[in-house]
Structures are given as structure tokens and as C-alpha cells.
Length: 548
Image (cartoon, rainbow, N blue to C red; front, side, top):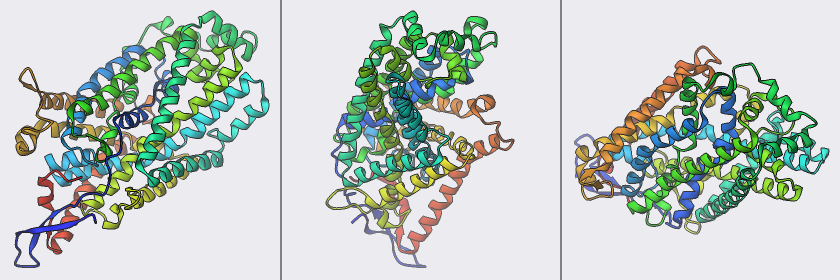
């Protein structure tokens, strides 16, 4: 049901007539709402996993950074990239994301190669993100509940979900992966609705915590923390890092550390274009205003939320305490936003309810990473780069069950790698850059589309002018510079980012995205030759926008 051959467009004297290859309707249904796509975008940048949990560990690597500049500047630099993806999402309202854009504007071989690197990075990231559920959601939540209820049993049980418990992490990660894939196989609408609900509940809990911290004075927090950690507990944490050059109050803010932190913190805003990979299932996805709302709106919302969160966090907790705690000088609890907010409530019932609500951030993150994998496999098959059965859509559920099943297998396999192999962090480091290569090549497509593919550009949603000035080429040019800078920047901070853990790792990290592109190019030419032997010319496929 997923492929068909059109009328002959050329002939070959050495084999069967060469025909243009076209596609029937995908079988997918446009049942996702705008709010579902926004929830998916936010899932890729969930504030808790970004700035309020994982992000706080950045303080240990860059303790004298100016946290506001490190967050705000990358967000501003993300705007051209957000606009570029919004315009492409509206112009190509199809499943596949960057693969569709680059294959139609640049060349199909480059489109496949660039996307292949992103798929590789996504698979590795899926195993890592699955571990967020036990390590950064269940474990801290149980620690919070154990602390505020003075239950040593609950606190001890939390250890079953700590990074040191390999089986606990693995089994919980697999449970999260299978849950999402089963929901996605039953109905795309179902998994999207559930994730939207989770994001909404988490958002309410986060807002309540922000309000609590906003009205918590530093002296009040010190008193509360000492109540749980013991007399003088707060002061011990602060004194542990004193005189070591970690506090801005001792040595001032560092431009170098702030710049390095920007590379990490740009990840807390820039990835809000993940929803583009399910565009073939989103209602009215071909509307420019709607896609700008989805992508740019998500990015702005994320940035404002995190800025406010960091402000109230430092207001109540204290900057020096936060830096020292992130550096490992806190012996009780977990140095995270929800832990401190729960303590600040002063009410164990409220703390338990809010901490449980915070559990819900982990699965939307994993869902946002899994979606491009399953839809990528689906599109590869649909365009004859993989066997046709991979893109088979169940007529009752309207979901690509085989592509989802393969995604589940790959994610579980990677989760085992993450849980039991100490070298997983090295593999994850190798997977960091392909995402920025994706943005770089999409930016190039934006820059050249008007001249290279005028038949696709003229009169399309990408053909947007403000005061007579075309937006897409300018956004593309700025995005080229920004994404190129992000590709180069981590190599100047190898120690802080873990690139120096092995002597060969910096070189391998730089080569990995290029190798993926080379493999993808070879793959495409092999697929073209194989299809040509059966009388099908794939080149003609890439001159059109694929159907729904």
C-alpha cells in the first residue's frame, strides 16, 4: 500500500524501462493537534531535564559562569533556527523532518547521509533518555518523599533506581520504552494525548514550585534545610567550596566559562523543532502561522520559564550553595530544583504530591526522542531505501507498527549498553555533533532554496517576506553561522565536556558525523542502482513534495 510506479519517463537499452517512482498516501492520519506538537517540542527540551535537573550539573563544570547570559544568549541565537524549521515544516508538512527538506532542496544522497547521523544520535540518546525515568525521576522523587516523611525505608528503596543499580536502571528504562511504543502502536493520537497530559501536569507542579520558591526567603530555606540535614548543614555545604575559586563572589564571573556553558545550555532551547518529524500526522501542518506558533512559541515559552525558574531558584537557595552542592558537597538528598522546592514547601503532603507530579517529565523527553526514529525508518522504507514492509501501516490503528517495533528493539538494546557498560558515555559523546550537523545542512537548504528550487519556493509557505525582505534566506544564513559555531565550540572545552577522557575521542567525535554522511551517500547510490535494475528511477522522486 505504500508504493507504486508511475508511467515511464525514460528508457534503458540495457534493462527494463526506467520509470519515475511515486508514492501513494502514507496511510498515516492527521489526528495530532497543535497542542500535541507543542508538547512534543517541549518534551525535547523539558525544563526539568534541561535547566532544573541536568543543567544544574553544568554549574560544577562551569561554576563561575553567568547563568543568565549562558541561557539567554543561546536562546536568542536559536531564533533564526526556530524560524527556519518553522517555515520548512509549513512548506513540507510531511513526516521525515530534515531528510525531506535536504533531499528535495540539496541532493537525496546528502539528505539521507545527514539524517542517518541524526538517527544514530537519536538511538543512542534514546537509551540515555530512558535512564532519566529511574535515575532523575523515580530516584529523586523517592528521596524527597523519604526525606519529608522521615521514612528511611523509602529513602533506601530509592537506591534501586540509582545509577549504581544497573538492573534497576535497565528494567525501569525498558518499561518506559515499551510503554511508549505500545501506546504509539495502538494509536498515534493516544501516545500524543498522554504525553500532552503529562507535560501539562508537570507544568502545573513546576509553576507551584516556582511560586513556593518565589515566596521563600534565603533565611527561611536555610532554616528548613538545616532541619533536614542537621544543624549547620547549609553552612557546611557553602564552606566546603569556599576559597577554591568556584564562587563568582570570590573571583567574579568568567567569560570563558560562560561561553563554554552556552554550548550546554543552548540544548535547553534549540531543539524545539522535534515536532517537525511527525508533521505528516499534525492537523493543518501546512499553515505557516501555526508552525511558527508550534516551534518559535515553544522556544520562547521554554526560555521564559527557565529564566524565571533560575531566578527564583537562586533567590531562595543562594548561588554559592547551589554551586557547592552541584560540585558534590551536599551529602543529603539530590542537588536539584524539585528537591529544594519540596523542602521549601514546609508541608509534607504538598511536597509528596508535587514530587510525584514531577515524575511525569521523564516520559515526554523519551517520547520526543523516539518519535524521529520510528518516523525516520518509516520514511526510509517509503522511499525504497529500506524494505517496503517497514513502512506498512496498520489499517485499523493507522500506525507504522513495524517501524515502531524496530525502534523499541534499538532503544532497548541501547538501554542495556547504557545501563551495563561504563563506555556508554564515550558513545554518547560521539553522538553529540550530528544534531548540529542537521541544523547546519537545513540552514544551507534554507539559504539556497529560493535559487536552487524556485518551483518549490515560489508561492509556498517558505516564500515569506517582511517589509519586502525574504525571511528564509536571511534566517538560513544566520543559522549557518550559528550552527557552524556550535559544531566547533565543544573542541575548545574538551575537559569540561568529557572529550579528553580518551586521546582519540576528539578526533572520533569530529569524524562521526562525516562518516555518517559518507555511509548515507553510499547507501543512497546503492539503493538507486538497485531500484534502477528494477526499472525505477529514484531521482525523479526527489523533484516533488511527497503526498500525505
